[in-house]
Length: 345
Image (tube, rainbow, N blue to C red; front, side, top):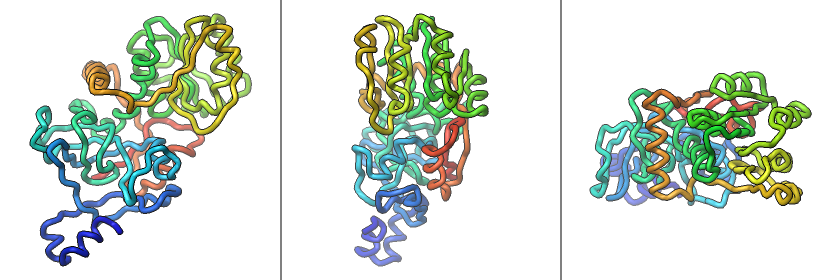
């Protein structure tokens, strides 16, 4: 039974509406395809506890992980019904009594939510809530959380990227990929990016990549090898089930490492390529980060934003009633070009 139906069953319709304000948002009532993202207009506005922040959401980012959770194939299975989403940007409307670093009226963005962000209001913990610089719109703010923190964690906290090294961003035209391009260039790395369309390649190039290749072309990896005869220090891999076997063949002796950010299936690799050069593969997930990690990532990212070194690259912006289309597109686009976002106004 839906939450608002439970409330109505315990109270008269009139008394419930008097004491329980409603909002519009997306509810997933059963696991399945994107069509399960259904907009409802009678969802109770979530109230914060002592340790939560309530946010009026103006934009919500759409991430591939949202679709895995909705399909029921992710390790995290929320209780049904639930509202999808972790990335958002908006304005603080209420705070719990234990909240110290935020106040009502603050512009903020999130990378996780206790209630889901595909709705007019959401709840978040301080650990996953961050001040949004005035130079960015809410749509741009909703593109920061998971993409930029994941990119930062992959490049610097796990990948230990250093100025002067070369990084291949394998799938650079999506939200995380473009964040990787900007962050890597900001720290003096030589950046090679790939995309699947001419539009995607042009976007990756304009975002700052030194070289761009079409990963749908035959022998594009041979071109990357020719450009880097000694091998690459770092590969940021967005689709390991397709590319990992090739990634490990172009790594630099004793220094090469692959950071796996995305994967959608199984792949067979020849470990001898790792053994011969003493190279490595590391899996990356954002939510193993602790408070110190988030503080570090936000401090550095916000400094780059205020210096105008980093600015999210926006793709298509959808109205909330097209959430199902956004979730379909984030997985099935023939060539992603920028961040997909829901506008919630």
